[in-house]
Length: 156
Image (cartoon, rainbow, N blue to C red; front, side):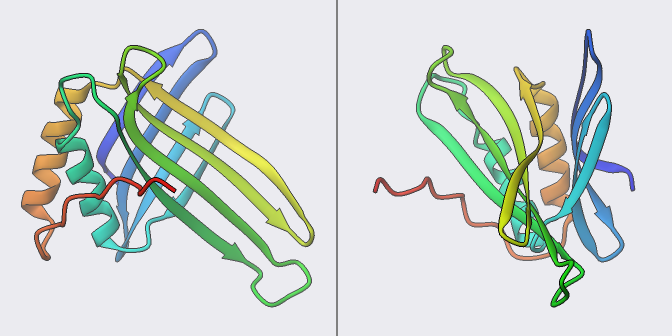
């Protein structure tokens, strides 16, 4: 699985990454921290196209901007050991920190009546120009309809 969209960085704890890759007929998001990594599937190529478009549309000027995707996988479905692993991936500009760009991943686990936090990976100040170039290449190479621009969440 070669990454199609990726943000990798290193800090005092080690290597971190958020990467989107093909996995057979599907698409996976890999979130990696120094001691743990996990991957979850995208619902389909349209979600990957919307992510690429959100990266292309990331504003250069300070303004409100955030888009989220929900990813999930259920294991041992319809058994007493059923477990759901789900996560949110967000792309945006942080209004509390000078509208710096970011990619953020937070996962959760649900087992029986319990839910718990999973992995959190936040790429602050991602290489926006490189991500835009990757997004442009993905949209050029990924067959399918032209993606609709992501719509911001309605106030509510």
